[in-house]
Image (tube, rainbow, N blue to C red; front, side, top):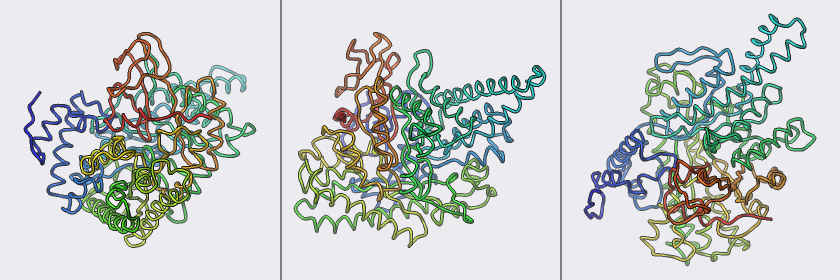
Length: 620
């Protein structure tokens, strides 16, 4: 252990020393990164240096000071603005597969089979993930991959004609072989994603959206995705946390028992009870909130509707970054004066927007050759020349920047006490906050031409950071800073015992004002023997919320055979039967924010762990 000298302000040397000593606020900030391996250590070291330099030399002092004080959080400083990178995106897989692309020394043509198409998807994900710092998503994957399954079918049909004279036999053979190839392809994709490491030292944060395809081929792709996930990874059949699976439910297609794809919804329910994923998108509600249908980018970031030449464009679009406002801090500073709260809130909201405008213009200096996979070979849906500037593809609402927020629960607690959820005045106060966010976002969109959006920040580590800084400054405040975490966005206080329908009804009112990013979830007991109960909740969400996740115990100990929910302590998680906490012989999965994490293998930061340990089950 390297002894740490005491300084009021940490120097770069101090921060590097923290990394060497594996300080949790450096090593565990992102639970998707395995801090023990060399490529992650290298990325963390680069991040420490980039963040330090950006705060001292790149960010305007006003923004750097506000970030350091915990007034705002300028996200992903380990990458941006030191590098002119952006956050998350919907990759234009359709355009890349149809028109070809280049990676490294290879010029890739349109694939001739579903097997080749999924192999290329993995390569695209790895390359794109190394050129951005947020998540990537495959929007409507079953429909995009469908033509390549059909190509495989035609190939098998031609082969069958050499062996069978009966056309019916020929078709049976072709369908059987195509079904197998689809399954093998989706299994290979699952394994490839989980064995890849991007240049930023982590498994690519990749989301796979599916569920709207209606043909036999699209249905087989959907079923294969779910069956592969149900089986699990490797010899021990461990739960995969990537790709994040997001299944779309649509009335008339798969919502009700009379719908043609209802059987696939039942398979999705089975998968969710055993593996927690898929999360679900409710088609009609997503259209209502965001303007048209599309998958989230990464875990929760949504794009507003956008048209070019009268056509809705979704794929190839992106988010340029996030700045989050510490709302509990404003409430604490103005605790006896709501007028004072709103005055300070307006000033801080303006600070967030100006910081985001700075973030946008860090991309001014980018040329297409800086990230060829994004700008020259089609990931953004554009194919620019090497020396072309890229800023035009972010304008006029094509890309977003996100005004993030955290801690509506704590802010209302300052003024109304900890049990305010059934107080109409308190609920109105919190709704007025997100409504004002939305109004200001619209104003800045109109003023700048860039799509400012309102974002329910995931806060994997920020839940700890803001609360920790406020506790240092204001002391331990009951039900606010004493918990050591702030509640994510608009979520119901996790410590309270309510049923899932109450939680959904409470949270649904915020969603229309936070269309730039949101997710709802409920904590359940084991659902393996009760998929019907989960279906009741899923169906209840359909017309109420757009995006919903299932949290249910799926832990397993491979030493004693225990299956269920591991014991959660301040030190971490362990098997309640034999005490095993070896990451090699356990599978312990928790939802960290919008995505899942293996919390024994990669320990969450202190505040997030406390929040996880505080969660009460929502039971009817």
